[in-house]
Image 1 (cartoon, rainbow, N blue to C red):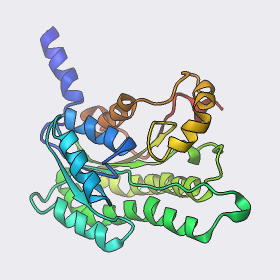
Image 2 (image 1 turned 180 degrees about the vertical axis):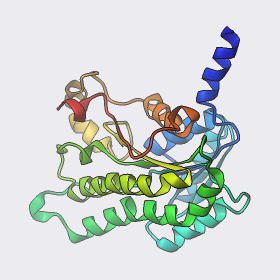
Image 3 (image 1 turned 90 degrees about the vertical axis):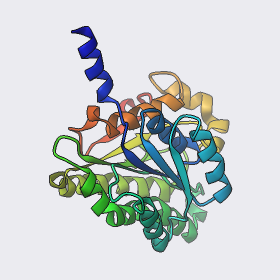
Image 4 (image 1 turned 45 degrees about the horizontal axis):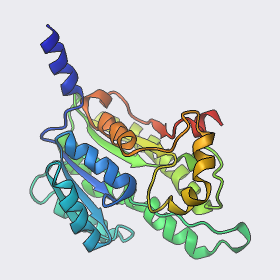
Length: 264
């Protein structure tokens, strides 16, 4: 009886045989998620604009399982379509899409430039929508009533509470992504596709490096759990949402921040 129960518990988080795409998967939160999915048994494709970073990340992830990297500049619609074509070239199904690629620009209100709106929106908000459009047939093909295909959008707690830094376009784009998550969840649920968002708090990454260098101790102290995020914290929530354990969730925004945004 005990062995049977353990087997069922293990199967809750098993991603063996699943295929996943993680954008921005060569570093930071994207790499944390990609590593978690690979270790759970998925075949993971990652993308990044930097070809050298793709090659290095593929080598690192291959130590844990099946990983493949594709360079792509997802701020361009045509590149999203090219990536979708490559992802579905060997299989018409895709089980998991993680929209993680993003950018952030800090600049005081008085001098915040137009370009900081355009470049951030072009990467944070448009590509998740374009990739859902391009990969919708593959996601429909993979999903069933008992085991839906999964879309996981990476938002931010900057869209839930007021950030300490002047990143106007970033927090606005992530708030829009949270709402897009809810809209798509309602539409795609009947098609056996769940859509959820993860809203990370402070995690070690290139994007957060300057903030953590300047305010890391203060930020950690502000969290009820008293620390910044670790790799396994992000890997864990991604595996949960992608696995049988998370099959009945859709339209959710999950803060992974040690309680910073939800208890402020």
